[in-house]
Image (cartoon, rainbow, N blue to C red):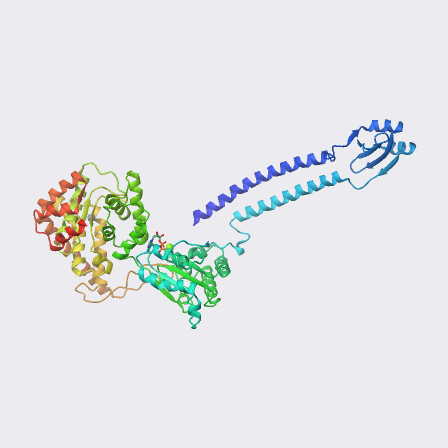
Length: 636
Ligand code: ADP
Ligand code: MG
Ligand code: ZN
């Protein structure tokens, strides 16, 4: 924010300098133009001839002059000669020319003093005036522009609404996959927009607001656009954060502008992204309320009340924090419909992959089912991004179509990081290999663990030395119903890296490489104890889901247990971790031979696929059932 402000100021400073330079160029040419125009007032009239003053006097004496019209304001005289009646001679006069009048009287010449300038002079003056006018207009425009650049300080009250309008979004429901329930619910909104009579005829009130709730990247914006696209109505969109400005009153005036424009274009959709930025509970948050935000919210509420149900405007808002929204926003007549847009399950991911594979060249080898199975927890945006990464990799490798290899690399790239060049053979490389083989071996030997996809010691950006990757059981991921046995095995697998380090190199040589693993273990074990009732403390929930501190809700979270219970929780967490660590140590010491062989292979090849890994381990041990079944699973 600060950097942004600074930038605007320095920008306006340069534009000031530039405009003054520009101004001088214009002023310079104006002065030149003036000079031309004033210097030759009769420049336009080429038919005229000239006489010098002395010639005129001579001609008068000779009796050749018929008539003299003097223009004192311009110091000229127009002379008509007797033998040349058509031509008018112009004579430049001196400032004082007393003898002219005397001579005229003496020679009986018609002498007339004229006040009004002649037509060419009027033209000249008019031109001058035009030039002056043009310069003034230019100056005003320049002034306006500089003042606008200076942070709109002068006219912030009439701020330009920063919303976008799309007459046709071009997005259809077909482009949105994997969120079928949400789509079905919103199909109705399309009907509201297309055939409101159907509802109003029987006295039904059309809803005004729909709140889309879900994590980022799940397709909320896309869905709102699809509604507009399907109904064929304009789409107005603004982000909640754009309402909240430095100047008080700007947000409110933006809301007014937005609704005014929308009313002019009804029927239409208004989409407010990140509504939590303006719609947070009023009078809450760290440091008290924010007047500006509250004014904006009030304006929004007023506008929503201000139009009748069938005006053809439907407001769709998106947020991933419905819990922080002000109650007034959720009242009937406002955002009274909530539609949840969740992370896609297996079928959803498959659908989304199909949508985004439409315009990409895929090798027949690529199985979207397999990708969908490998990507639990991916949002629609993640999947779209991953497929695009695969396409980029394919182009970079000069291949005709995306092959499974590019897809795998793209998934790793999105989930773990860019791959870097492999380490040279060194003690560090050996240690990483042991650590990762430790994880991988436990993944392969534990009864409830999901099978290994691959283990690699090719480093990744973000300080990842290597990793052992599992193929998660999609049913469990999608339902979120993890068993206690699965969680325990997960903790054991996670401790496998450290366990091998200690087994092979001794207690003194263990490294900090396991820091992340230990973090995961602590979190999992603590959740098992305090939320899932999976410890000796019994089936009690001791904590509500992660009470992250954020603006808009009371930040003093109160623990729901006493000091005494806290000590017991710590004790239980520790018990779980120790139990799992012992288990990991035991399995590892029983399998030193295969570990050493796998480590040598890994150092040589850098990556071992799950399939091969399992086959090698199977030469030494009987694999659990789940692992044997998974060999087939990983293939298709
Ligand atoms: P959100 O608004 O929920 O954060 P977006 O609608 O902006 O997510 O999604 C970003 C992009 O991700 C979309 O433009 C689209 O390419 C892709 N995407 C997300 N969800 C879906 C989906 N359900 N179906 C198809 N594409 C999706
Ligand atoms: Mg969005
Ligand atoms: Zn590890």
